[in-house]
Image (cartoon, rainbow, N blue to C red; front, side, top):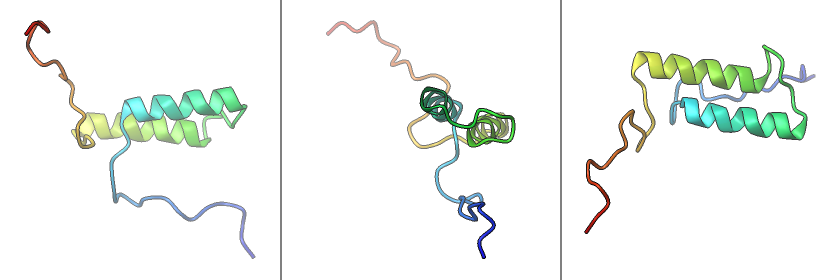
Length: 74
């Protein structure tokens, strides 16, 4: 019988969690009344985002400096 816990998860594969993605997950969980405990999904997402940022893993198209360097004029 299933234990009720999902055995899914990326296992280190796919796109790494970013702090901004974790923030969106937390906001969604808070708005929907989801589990905001320290062991909940939002907390695990935040930890993964922080861990990935600290180890230099970033998802495609995400960087610390996203400025174009220009002043916006043509």
